[in-house]
Image 1: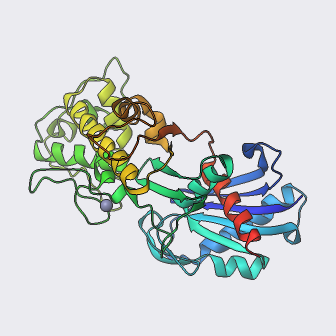
Image 2: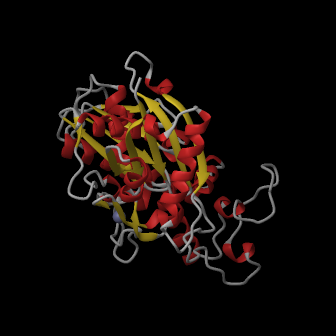
Image 3: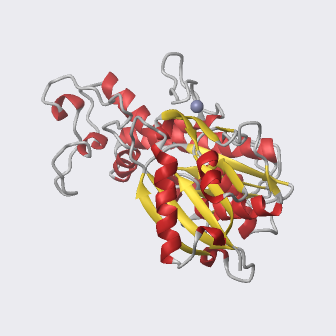
Length: 361
Ligand SMILES: [Zn+2]
C-alpha cells in the first residue's frame, strides 16, 4: 500500500496527515492519521515550512512510518501560487512563502501544490468519479471555489481560476457599495461571506450610531443570556464614546455569526442583510452555472453548513429541480446543489493532489 503525505495550510490552523490510495476503502477512511496545529502569525514567514516538516515527522512517528515510506505529497494553501510559492495571501498575512522547495529538499518525492478550493474540488473528484463536471465551493469567512471539468481540476496560470467569491454579483447605490477585501466593490464575498455580512452590518451601524440592533448585543464584552439580551445602539455599547467597529488587524468587533444569531432573534437589520445575501447567493450560483455548466455544485464551509436554511436552501428552492431551468438567474440547466459530505474535504483533496502528482511520473 502506498502512503501519501497531505498538508492543508490555513490562516488559523494547518493540518498534516497520512493518506492511502486503496480504492476499496471509503474515501473518508483513507486518511489514516492527521494532526492540527496553530498557524502562528509571525513576521518571518520562513518558519512555516519548518513547522510543517516538524509536524510531518510527528505524524509519521505515530504511524511507525519513516519519510522513505512517502510516495508523493499533496499540499493545499490559500491564495494564488507561483512556482511552489504562496504569493499574496491575506489570510496568512504575507506576500511570499516558499512551500514546495523546503518540502522537496526534505522528502524528495513528487509534490502537487494547489490552492485550497481547487484542492477541495479535486477531493470531490476522487469521491465522485461519476461526476466529471462540478464546482466545489466554500462559504465561510470568505467565498472560494474550485472548478472540476472533463474529469480534472482547471487550475489557471496562478492556480486561481475559480475565484468565484470575486464575481461582482452584488449591488449598492453609489457610495454605499459593499467593499471587498480584494479592493473591488460588490463582490459576492462582500455580501454573503461571514466577513462580508459582518462588514455590511458594521458600516450601517457606524453610519447610524443611535440605531439599536441585536447584532451589537453579541459584541458586548460580558456574556449576555438569551433572556437578558436586548438590542443595543453603538452609542449605548460604548457609553457615548465614538468607537470604530473595525480594527486594522481585520479582527472586526462584529463577526458573521452575530448577524446570523441576530437574524434568528428577529432583528430587522440582520433580516435585511440576510435577505440581500440570499439574493446575491442566487446570482452567484447562477453565474457559476453560466460560466462552468456543472452537473453539480458541492458546498462546504461554516457559514453555508451552519446556516444552510438561510444561505443555500433558498437558492435550491428558487432554482427548482436539477435539469430544469431558472431563467431568472441562469441560462444553463439547473445543476444539483449538495453539501460536501466530508469534514476534512481539503485534506482529502490534498490526497487527490498527491495521487495526481504520483501518477504524473
Ligand atoms: Zn473581491
